[in-house]
Length: 246
Image 1 (tube, one colour):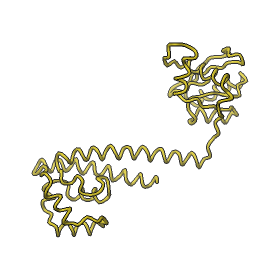
Image 2 (cartoon, rainbow, N blue to C red):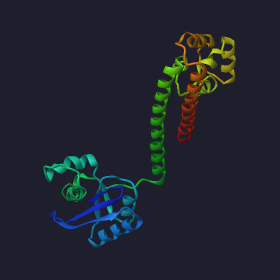
Image 3 (cartoon, helix red, strand yellow):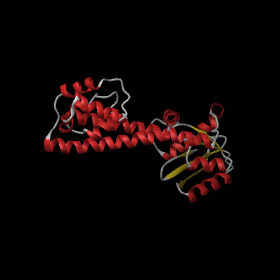
Image 4 (cartoon, rainbow, N blue to C red):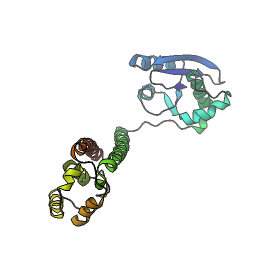
């Protein structure tokens, strides 16, 4: 059983009767992983249980011909009660639990099948995209809260605040003073130049801007526009990278 950690890994080897044969720890380094594989080989270990199915430790084990079985942290948390009532996280104890559960429940556990390079690449891209989407949601919420205070008319003007047309509008008309320059004709001309493909009539959009509570103007408006442009730029960058990953 191997209790994975960021700095070092606790290892416990048990025999067929559940008796501890060896306990040791190795650093999370190239030398440490070589030592791990070597000590497991000397102990005759052919199978190992660990809490995650990826990373350098798993790769080293698989390369050495060790069968890897993943027992998740949630499962380990529930299994600790088999061996004691404390239930506290302890690396050495968890390494023993992993080893002994592998011994007793082997028939219920499935060996880890290494993913193909294409699957690994796809999984990485999907995970990165999901992270960026979460960032986009957070920044969009931050921008919306900001605009509700300093430029309410821009909120809800287009279908999505993080859309390309919305971000382009904020880059050009980022505060109340700049929006005051608009008329129906000027807004229609800008929308055409920006490639707006929505179905909303420019007159309806202009009326929404005009009827909304007025935002900050003069120096306060100029200062708030800096924040608006900064957040809009972050969203534009996130949109580009999300599209690239897609």
